[in-house]
Length: 24
Image (cartoon, rainbow, N blue to C red; front, side):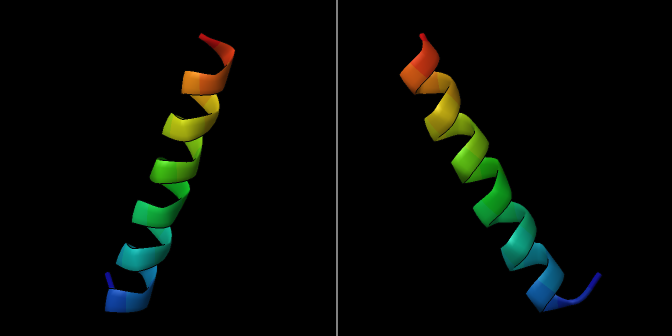
């Protein structure tokens, strides 16, 4: 996995977490 892919994955996970917090 490249560094770019890792950063994109982290950013995606952070977005999902923040969206989940909004629903809760």
